[in-house]
Length: 329
Image (cartoon, rainbow, N blue to C red; front, top):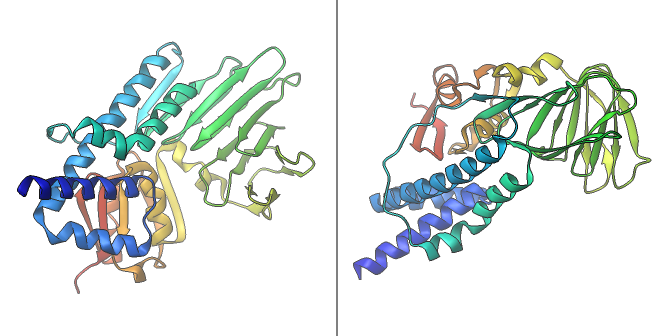
């Protein structure tokens, strides 16, 4: 009976972890998860074991990718997050891992196999390409490079990149992200694929032409300091917006600058660098307006700096789970 109960708890823990990692939790799910996690000490232990198994799988995929990238010597890697070691637990049965983690595991392996350059959560890479262009990958990003005598193309498979383009009028450099294509008419720009609305482009220097791959006639030319998003579902562009270039490119130097943003927006952005699920237990805090600068080289510690000025509690339940709630009066 005890073995059956423990097996059931392990099954529940793995189910919750898959939902967390695939961002499949609704607000109702979050409430049920918190209730489950705090109702029994064994639940927390089982969830931590599931986390550690998943982290081992992620490290294995990352090591596979690093071995492949050893063929590309011109890479400067910057570790953003200091990852703490956790004690090893007995392995979960192979069949259980296969059932519960296959989608996440194969996604990691897919990007490792398909990309020329890949960053894990809490990492960025600075790469000098063969034409002299400088490509910077932000956290959890992947690209392929296709440079020939006729074309220069970068495919952004996931994440966010900044590119400083070396001039070559015979071979304009373009970046594709989903249905969006951005062609350099100047020097430098940012492309982000994992935007909620669709892929976006921010021009940090000179000009960039953006167009829909599905409908090439839909195009626009952006000037320095302008941003646009392609709404992939409708193959239309949002209204061009003026943005603060220094704020947009602050991640290149390891900073996240926010001004009058909601706490929910800030936590969503920080989550990209921590890789943990951050749950706002008090939903009234979500729209709280905040301004400041966070250090992306130490995102977990920097996040804690918000506690006193905002009057909130930030609790790291496990390495993959953080609770944020209103502090005591």
